[in-house]
Image (cartoon, rainbow, N blue to C red; front, side, top):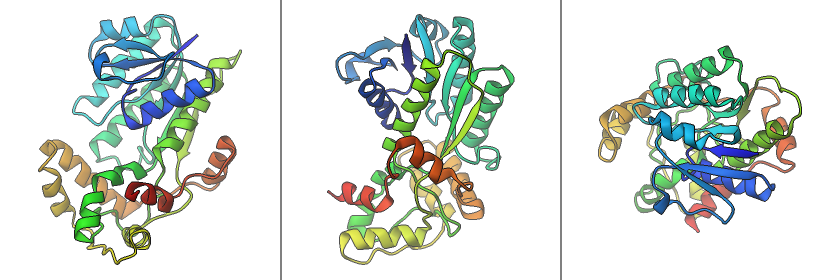
Length: 287
């Protein structure tokens, strides 16, 4: 049977597709524009839009398991509910959903609250699901590489509580493992929640220190100015999204993104190897 991957052209979704192929699974990528979709041979392409129920119905024909990833967009919650309702209609009960860690704690952050609402629907409607709850993506740092290198500052106001940052490649591999586990199970599996975290906790000062080590010169963490952060983000994203990111950064400062006991060990066992480190990720970004 076929595993449908939404968000397949993004960083996480692309890694999911790659990992499914490496494991011999049959993958179908749901994309808006097939002309812009570059996948290895063997990947089926389904064209459509997450707000178009008919295109989702077509994409889910013959599908046994769904990887549901919704981007941070204004109608993210609506997209997810439509996809899940269409999945139920199509008899696709096996789901791996990409949520976010502490979705039930960051209750004032729009895209966290939306993901928690999706989790509630999944649980209430009886899907056989794995809910993945990743912490902050190391891959977000590519957006600040130029600022760090050219201006000598680490500009993300991530606070002093600490974030258990995770590499998107680890997320994709864990998602693929869970998709195949559900795909191949002869019996229904219970709902599972998995925190996806990195092997270490990083504060703003810690992150700046890692960049300093990799670059061989001092990188400064200027502090936690969330109002300035929002204004900077508004230069290249909609104002609602910049405000959402500001609310998120304020919860970074008040709550952090802290693993539960045993999270790192569970993921290490699942992968059969250590989780990728922030230092190695930064070194790859610098090249």
